[in-house]
Length: 99
Image 1 (cartoon, rainbow, N blue to C red):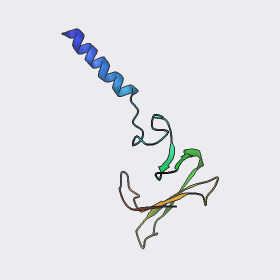
Image 2 (cartoon, one colour):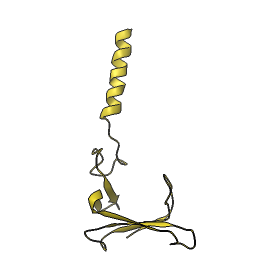
Image 3 (cartoon, rainbow, N blue to C red):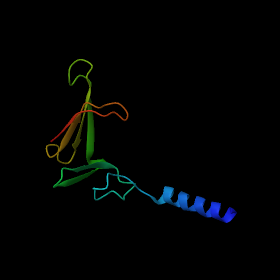
Image 4 (cartoon, rainbow, N blue to C red):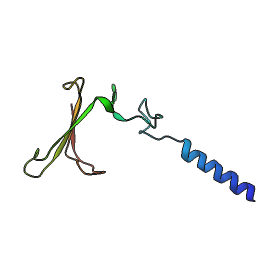
């Protein structure tokens, strides 16, 4: 009985430490737990931008007084892709514009 409990515990701990669900299952980098950056897939084109090439700016009154927004863009090619979102608090969900 002790062996079964130990084996089960080892199995579940292995799954916990070895699994890597970094994305929704559709991204090329979904098994890279240490990937830091922006991943975007529009259905036909996938874009991966490393964290070192991302710039973030906060606009405190973008949507009117007290309505903040965050803009994220690629520093090496600022006009290529940028994301503007009104969701600026931790774990917030809200509208955004990706161009």
